[in-house]
Amino acid sequence: MDGYRDRLSLVMLMVLGIALIAAPVFLNAKVAIMNTGDSAALEQRHADDPVLAKAYRFERGGWIYVHLEGAPHDLGYQHGYLLAPEISDAFAAVSSEMTYTSKRNWDFFRRAAHTMMWPKIDVDYQSELAGIVDGLRARGYTKLDQDDIVAMNGFMELADYYVPWLDKQTATAAPTSKPAEEHCSAFVATGSYTKNHQIVMAHNNWTSYNYGARWNIIFDIVPQRGYSMLMDGFPGVIASDDDFGVNSDGLMITETTITDFHGWDPNGKPEFVRARKAMQYAGSIDEYVKIMLDGNNGGYANDWLLADRKTGEIARFELGLLHNRVWRTKDGYYVGSNFASDPAVLKDETTFDPNNMAASANARHARWDELMAANQGKIDTTLAEAFLADHYDTYTKKTGPNRRTLCGHGDMATEGDPMFAKEPYNPAGSVEGKVIDTNMAESMTFVAHTGHPCGTSFKAREFLQAHPEYNWQANTLIDMDAGPWTQFRAHEHAPSSEAEGN
Image 1 (spheres, rainbow, N blue to C red):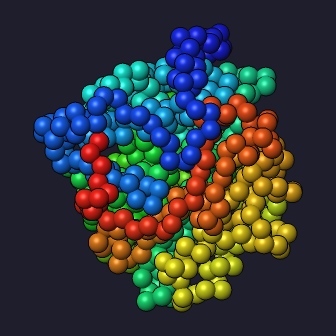
Image 2 (image 1 turned 60 degrees about the horizontal axis):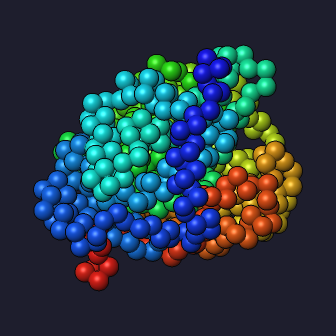
C-alpha cells in the first residue's frame, strides 16, 4: 500500500503542469476563461439540444446562477455543459491543493473514488456524476473523466478524513496528513430571539482562498424526483458542500465542521452523496437526520443547523462517526463555529480542547453567544449580515480581523491560536456568506455575498509577495473580491441584458 500510494503519477502531473503553465499565474477572482468553440455555435447548440432547453446560467454580484432541471443524467449534463470552464479551473485548484496537503498523488485519489466511493453512490447520483462528464465533453473539455469528477466531489472528505484515517491504519511513523480543521461560522435562531419570532439562519463558509474564490455558484435545481433546491455550491460538485440551502418543502440547512475530528468508515456512503440526498428528499428534521445516518462514513463530520419553516422548529444535529445527538427547540438558538457539544464526541472522536479560549472555534463560540444575548428579540437578516462580518476577538477583547473572528482571516496575525502557530498566515478563512429567514424560505430565496462578508478583498499577488512560503499555490491562487449582498430566487431569470448564451 505505501509504495503504491507514494508512487508519483508522472502522466497526471505533466497534464496538470501543462494546464497550469498555460494559465496566467495571477488572475482576478472572476477568472477570464475562454470557452471552447465559437460562441454563436455554442448558443445554437444549446438551443437545439432538448436536454439543455430548460437549463441556463447568468452572473450577478460575483455569483454564477445556474438552473438545472430534469432527470439525474440531465442535471449532470446541464451542470457539466454550463459550467465547463469553471469546473476545469476548479479541478486544477482542487487537485493541486489535495495532493500538496496530503502528500499523495492524484492517482491515489482517483483510486479511492473508483474503488471506495463509486460503489456506495446511489444510482441516481452515479447517473448525475456521469452526466457532468458527458456535459464537459460536449463542450470540448475531455481531460476529466468519471474518477476525476467523483474524487473532486469528495474533496472535502478524502484529504482531511480518509487520509488521516489511512495513516493510522498503516501505522505511519510520521503522518503526512493533518486532522480536519475549522470550516465555517453559522447560527440559526427563532422564537423570542428573533424579530417577529421567525426563523433566521446565516452561514459564512470558511475554507482556503484557493477554493473560496471559486465557491461562487448558486444552484437552482428542479430534479425529476424529490424537492426542488436552492443552494450555494462549487463547480462540478453535486452537493452544496458548505451545505447552505433550502428545499421546496421548507427545510433550511447549514452546518459547521467539527474541529480535530478523526474517524472514517471505508464501507460507508460518501458524505457529499448523503448531504445532497438529504437536501433533496428530507421534508423534516427527522427525515434529514435519518438520511444522513444511513451509511454514515464519518467524512466531513459536522454540526448541522436545521430549520423547518412549516413548524418553526430549529435543531442542532451533531454527527460524528461513533456518536450523534440532536437538540431541538421552537424558542432559542444554535450556533456553530467548529466545536463539538456532545461529551461522547469530544472524548471519543476528537482531540479538540474545548477549554482553550485562544483557539478559533472557542473564541467564535463565545462571540456567537454574546451576539445572541445582546440582540435577543431583534435578530433579523440585516443583523445576520452584520454578524457574519464581525471582527471582535473575544480572546484579546480587541476588534480586528484574524482567525478568531466570525469573519475569519487566516492570513492575518492571530497570536495564541494553535492553528495559526502551525500554519501562520495561511490564506484561508471566510470566503462568502448567506442569510435566509422564514419568509424567504417560503418563496425559496436567500441573500448571498462573495468574498469576505466584511467587504475586504484578498489580492493574491500581494499576499504571495509577502508570504512566499505559500508559493506552492502560485499557479492557482487568485484574487477573491468581496461582492455586494445579492438576492437570489428559485426559477429566476436574469434580465435579457444580463443573460448569457453559454
